[in-house]
Length: 73
Image 1 (cartoon, one colour):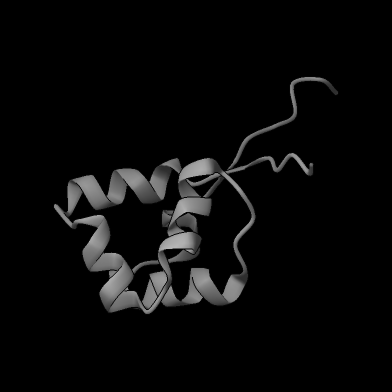
Image 2 (tube, helix red, strand yellow; image 1 turned 90 degrees about the vertical axis):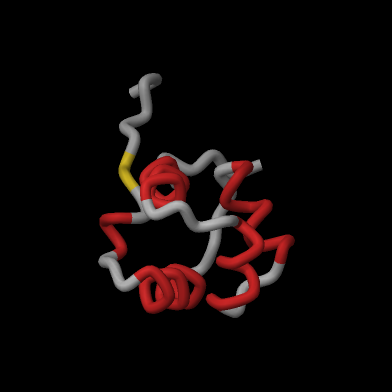
């Protein structure tokens, strides 16, 4: 399993701040539930998905993701 050092916490916080429900993101951003589940699990999603989320939320990629340094290095 590949361990990513990218966190989607800013995206999830943005949804809370904007009071947007997960089902509205899936429906209106054109992503699947399985893709949204990947976000919840911190798994890889493509830049095409990031693009769709940015378009829906009218934000920049940096508003959705953050880099988390590897503590083992």
